[in-house]
Length: 356
Image 1 (cartoon, rainbow, N blue to C red):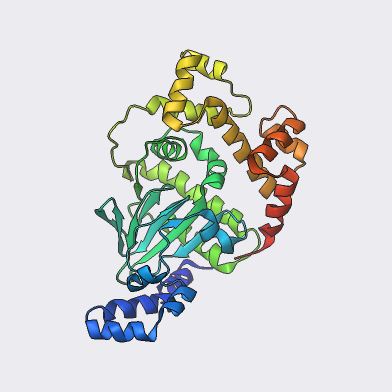
Image 2 (tube, rainbow, N blue to C red; image 1 turned 90 degrees about the vertical axis):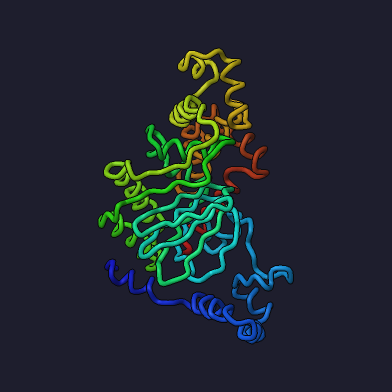
């Protein structure tokens, strides 16, 4: 699908957008708003998942905390969701359990973090990490694309970027493992035509609904980030944090990510010239996890990604994820997830062929 065709589709108003636009116009006059709400009652708003502030206290749709299950229920376990942000949707503060990339295709939008409003312009992307409270507003013909990726899948799929030390790596590592994180990151492509076209091709894959579309979308997103780092690293902005003293922790976590299959506290402490006790306390203070639990989480993330995206035998997966034996893998997996790896695969792998 050509880029111009994608743009034409994105520019066309959806039923939801027409509803929100009419509601915004109705707000200019109390009587007109009253008539509008009379035509579109609470039940209709709930059925369509329309965000109507007047219905909030009556049980109306207002998703303030979005878990993976809520947003990805339509995905049937695919890793990525691409959608246009509905124009004229009332701004509402919310959080979610996944990474969100909001890219401005045309025009501009407003992003609000902790009462601070920022205008994001055409060619700029806002990256919002899990559990960051924010709100977004688009109140004209501007076009904003939202790309959502599960935190767990993100950690494994984007490992090729996380292996290298750069400003994006530090942001992602902080978001994935540390208590202290920035609420957002802004990437300015300076209206790079190649990056714009890549984003439109991601949208095209989402619209066409062909087999393996999620694989191509993730590959294109990886290309987008690689190209961004290669050509526009100076256009990346992260708000400063009150304390910026954990660069060494980020370096340690990045190292562990690259060696999680066989990483030990003793070897890692020696690598960074720390005592085992000091490194253990540092990891616990920064991540809330013991060294062992941090490594185990990385192993489980690797295992789940392989269970859901490959046909490799359980024995091979246990080896690739760094478990000492398949028996140890099965016991640990069942203890963590209350089911065996084989059962997990049956539940999650079968739905991968179902398209959006």
